Image (tube, rainbow, N blue to C red; front, top):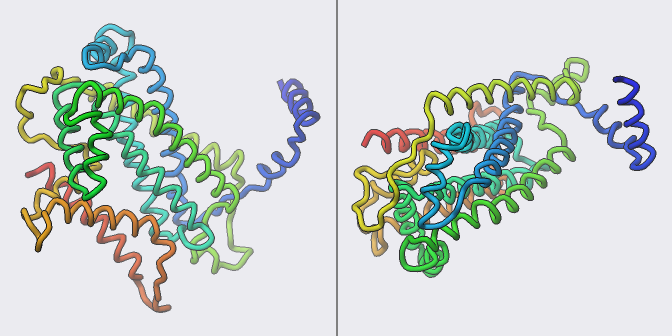
Length: 359
């Protein structure tokens, strides 16, 4: 076996000069410190994205988009196709776990200040990839064409329409008309399986390229150590094997959730029926949804809902551009203004999400 690998390696090296790549892999190191655990969440997010792609392709073999075929094809998948119910559950659960892991990865990067120079663009590409992942969740929610998905999409696109000037054209573009119909389903399907995959794979590729170019971030406490006390492990095979073991754990959790809590399919969408009581978006949109519910009808001369949407839009833009905002930190301060901002955002998101489920 070793001789075969050696021959293949020699064959490739003669044609593509792989020596520089092997040199890079051999010398790539990962710092080991008390915050090293956070390095794994980027890999977990990437692993779950891979699961999304594989299961999505499998579902695509049977799914038929259309007002009169989407629901029936999903029902066929979960009732007739061997392990179809499992693939659908894995796809749905991995989407939620991927977004959860991406949030953990984002906040770990934030609190370890790995977004600072020279990694500003790494942060920006990561933020945009997370935004696209949320777009995946929103666009994919409608595809089963069941009752809950239909009315959730109707509410979601109505919120988009509140944005001044561009809101109504975007809502019309998403819906393919004035209301949520089969045209909306076709557009969401195209966005979900064609537009978003191209964009997110491009962004993730650039994001990984930046990480490979600049290496793993080293916290200030690690940089301050004398060279002889700094500990590193090789990326391949040491860190890669640890990453793989973490993926196995995540995969077991994913299968457990998919088997014991299979994703349900509700009744088929009926545009003429009333919306289900207590309709709510997925958990990753719930803090925004609950905020809009708490806002008064009017704030000064503007609608409360519009103020909330504009505030979230501005907040997201500032969060993406956070590495470029100058801060003056006191050298002896135990907690920085950046950390306080991050803590406030996490507490706000968690509290509003919990209230969204309770109320």
